[in-house]
Image (cartoon, rainbow, N blue to C red):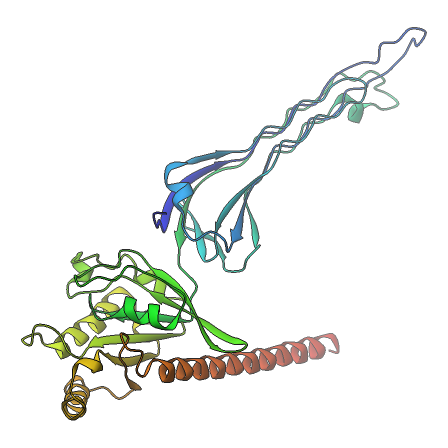
Length: 361
């Protein structure tokens, strides 16, 4: 299935049905009175997050989504039937924006989360609502209200704990294949990965995390070089970035330090928040370097790069160092989750204390 992470659609809710202005007509009943029923409400359009969907391809070609109108009311106190609601199922991680106002309507990050996109119109009143002691035979009725109509932009940002960053052919796809259940295409030419891939890494009997692999970046991506910045949005939700560097490029004239710095500059051009995320340096393809030479090359790279953060040496092809890296990632994520839970508890305590003090003033 083709990976589509952006779409523009129009949603149109159903109109409410008109009320009825009917009078009861039966044999032997001289003054039947009004019996016109109300119109049915129009159908409402909802969006619902579904973890079983991973692309917006259904909305790339189906642009308009129209709910049914409510039926009009009828005589004999018959109320019109409401129009059927429709649910638009979207991947978890979908952001919905109003194209006309630019307002962000929702960020669906939980499976089963449901959001109203366009409300159906209310049904009109029948004449039974207008009878009174002075108006015994009302002829009034009201028309149904129109349903809402909106033009929306859908944008998918995948949910992952860890994001892979690096030049084309740095070994990102090989790494995600080695440590997770993902099976992306792997080949010996650049830009083999054309869309994000997600994999679940099992780091223990009851522990796991999700890792995201995006197409490789090159210098000038901000100006559209390579695949540009199109897929960087999928790293914005991650907790930590792994910057994979090919320590043994086929072309010995390649300046790996300059390439690594270029990637970081591209992050800065795209988003300051993404550039500020925790980032670990992962030196890949160490199996292609002799042990003695490897130590020298690693030290030289780290010094020239000016790196002060965590450094890991791995071989995605043989699996060397991958388990150690995965355990370190799991430990880091556990620590972050613990800190977040403790902060939420402190915030809840503060809110409770403020509420208590306000109630006792």
